[in-house]
Length: 138
Length: 138
Length: 138
Length: 138
Image (tube, rainbow over all chains, first blue to last red; front, side):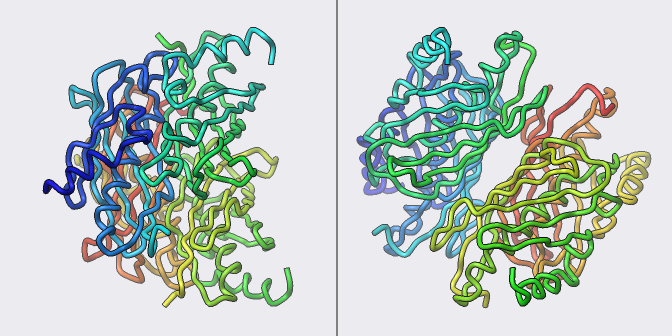
């Protein structure tokens, strides 16, 4: 990732849900985006476990950022259309680490697979995001 | 909703993602749960629109709370297994209002439909949550 | 439904999976499409129950037909992008009856909810289909 | 795959939707199941393309067979709870080839990823299946 992109990444989350939850983007390649989310009071559900919705925030952020960076140079926008996720393991603390991988890059649709793992590398959540590419954000 | 349940509702979200995002639960009936989420810097994505993941946090919270209240008296727990959502309309400010309706109440599985609307009543997100009922939280 | 549309409906399924499985379309309104599927050796899984995938064939057919009829007059096409379904009840014989209802009608995306019930009216499957509207089938 | 399992595989699809559509199971390993489906009048939609629901029949079959073989020795059953799929490429003829890979093997839940490709190896559909493990089929 070049410096310009890293700088944009570090600023893109200001005043967003990413900041409210303490999310950090850690890598951006063409078709692969990584980030992490702290498991603490900002992301817990009432039983002190990571809220499933927090995993989806991470998953949807990674895929959306990945699509934006793929099409922004062409003046196009990327809109999240559908997201789904299986929650397979509870997490109480530490961080969860997400990796979004582009499964399909079409002219109108991108599909991302996002796996989220705990600090030990165990799968916590597996998610898929459908992004529609539009002529512009307007 | 009786007073005891309302009191539990108001406390259940302390120190959780619900508090971090400003979510409020507003009604709890058997098989119908309602709540709302502010659309502001805590729930925005970088373009100043409601983050799709924020909608999923609301959807998953409503369905999970609904299942917990249905089975807690029997000493059972409710675990979110799968969630999916279509994002159909952008929202810049105000609140979004979610209603979770129990579509299927089985011995092992609950399925919830959750619709989220903006202040004008337009559909913003439609979601479905699969909850597994387990013998206990332990 | 006028006669011309009914005639198209009865012919549209020739030499398709709909014919292989014995599916019948029974009603087509703007935003509401109904059809049914026999539960027999053509739609069973190995245990003699309705195969979950058969439910999805019915669900996806109903929503797709509904979108095609909404946009065909404008020379546009409809492409199924994502489908999901919860299977909530087993069925051994008789018919299952599906109703697709348009949840969102956008310029680029249609979202359909499809509920499938057995002959007694019990919910068997609840599904959601995302359809992308494209300039033409070409 | 030993001979006994292969024999069961070849018989398991008799008088089912798998037979109606011409599906063939081609490999069964622990956590990996493969099969293929012909793209012809039995699996087409009205425009002569593979019906999205046909892909889901293949996906759900592969994952379900995989879970059954993992738990049948323990006298347990496997019930498909939720399935979802993205359709990313049209196919007119030939075969489509599916591979189901076990993403999560829990005591109560299995999650399968299923990718379906055309004869050229291009991704046609990517799907995820949630299976619930139950004490017995009874």
